[in-house]
Image (cartoon, rainbow, N blue to C red; front, side, top):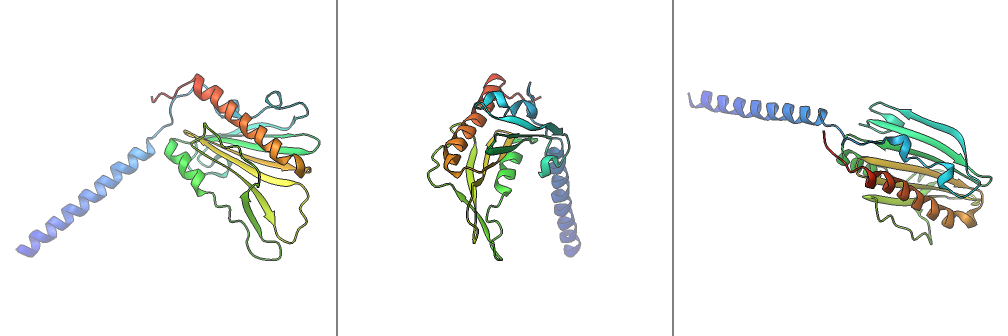
Length: 206
């Protein structure tokens, strides 16, 4: 009899855990992003925001799906490609169901790179680059360092998370001497574009 009561209590406890898990899962699935009066294409960089010489080489595209731009649990993602005679920018801005999802996606990125073989690649902060975003929740600038290869130019990435939005910008330049100044200007412009929209339209939950 005692054994039967213990078994019943155990089964009851398991049932409670399962039901709680199901309800928790449902609440996560029902989660929706804050209502905004702008979308991811608005947050991209465009030539009129940058110094003369930048032009669009791949028009903005938008994906509305759970893996937009190759990231998981997304709502929407937009992408644009710009270039000058020396440099190029490939930027994507993705929106997630919540700030928590955007934070997790930012932290998912691992920049240890390919550390094996003849040309091991690591990603490191650029020496001399001092700009830090005063607006982003998370921000970093890392550049590639390829062993056994004479460096000509720079390849860097600017990543910044703003609430439920995540901007990833891949930068290439053939003129390494201009990389610090150009990257600083581009990072500030990403911040300005985000500030313009986020400040104008505070988040409101439906």
